Length: 523
Image (cartoon, rainbow, N blue to C red):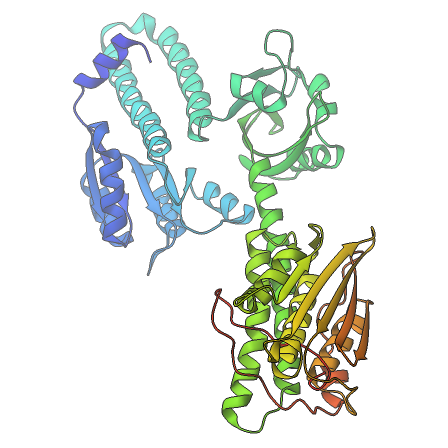
């Protein structure tokens, strides 16, 4: 708008803007956003209240919440449009829920000129309302001028009517483009194929406005064929269809594909066939990508939850103890091992967990009082499911060592070393200096969890060597394709459990207390 026009507009009397919402807090927020426009703001908390205000005053713009009790925004828009006095009143819907294409078409058919999603962006809402306020004022000015000129100069009536019609058509195209959030606006002459674009349209299509001349023949190859055919079908559909909205994909000259929403209004010729199509294009590629990421994340969360619950179920079913307190300590210790692995995976956004951190977190509490525990190995990141399995295996080995093995006496020592051969992580757990070791006659929970999780679930390998000097265990963890979804609880549940319970917790050195292990007796 030119500066002189802006000053003239500022001198006008304020016009009425009707705000309709059943929540007073939202009405107050709209008043704060629109206050700087300098117009009169009228609030209504229901559709009936809004109709009473409309019957008493001439409103430039109606801002309506879609979801309201009694009468929703769609019904209110229909009632407003049914009254001859409000046929041209601008109606803007505000929606806090995601509207489908069918809802949007329904809204446009009932007279809406635009939608504003929640959360509301103040600048966008003010821009949209300002457009229709200006259009309201100019329409009133044109009507007054037409009446005045008709009374004074009859011979200029024809020229004035033509000028007014051109101005109204120009304002209509401008209002549609700006109402779409200052995105790409266009106009297509169906008979000639010529198109008129604004700068936003050139930007969406990724072309240079100085060298690109938009015509239907030039634009057609840039629209995905099936989407173009769908648009043609809409234009060929029977009956009068004044507006339509459709999603379409375009391919830029550099090969990049973009998702867009095309909202348009059709102007028919004297035979009722489309003569001109005008509308806006909104680039929704980022929204589409966000929806895909959200869907992928939801599936991943569901997958992780099932895995964790299945493992916890196996722990609960397999753990035995002589009394409730021992049982609770055993279960809590094993679940804490999974929780610690979960924390490490969360830090990497579930990309993987480092073997060194899994080992250090498990054995940190036993490093006090001298170099009893030695660890050595490269930095290797395990996939999430394998990291959970290794965390539980390390917990079983450490707990067993505290109860029966090298970590149960002051003279005992533990060496944990691992390497990566390109396909597998090979971890060696070697205990020395502990009580005499002999191979157990039956399998405890430690042995079962190692075999079920590593051998069966991730197709790895567990080797237990009960040497007289202490337990030597080798874990081979493959790093290839994703393993099965969860620890198979049934196989482990049917095996006889002879685990005598959990050892007393070691002194707290990190957030997670000492974890369990499988050595001679407990394994």
